[in-house]
Amino acid sequence: MRRRDPSLPPLDVVVGAPLAIGDHVGELVNAARPMLALYIGGMGARNQNFHNNLARRYGYEAEAQHIQDLYLGGQKEAAAATVPQDLLVFRNSPRTPDRRRPRTCRATLA
Image 1 (tube, rainbow, N blue to C red):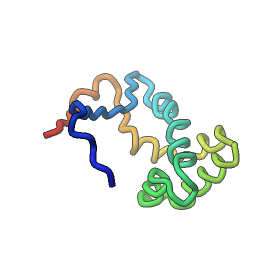
Image 2 (tube, rainbow, N blue to C red):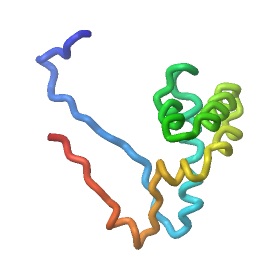
Image 3 (cartoon, helix red, strand yellow):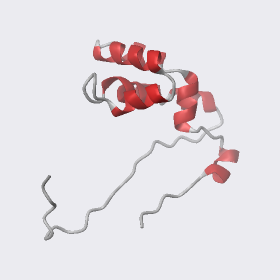
């Protein structure tokens, strides 16, 4: 493995996460379907996909396989429709505006 050139400036790390706040949690959660289908179905090679493997470890073996088959077969909308609702809720932790503050956390790098 190559080492990073020490003459380069410090490396900044940025973590991005989708955020949606609204009164209709179900609609907000469903908006994440295409993205989650992309990650489970289309990121990486068929046998080397971190997000697909993660869904399998969460107990969604058959669903992860089906999503990947659909996505890689070009049926992206069908793959998105196949993402289980409870997996969407688990991965996205939806909150209505009145519940967002108690569950908000901050990540810090030491």
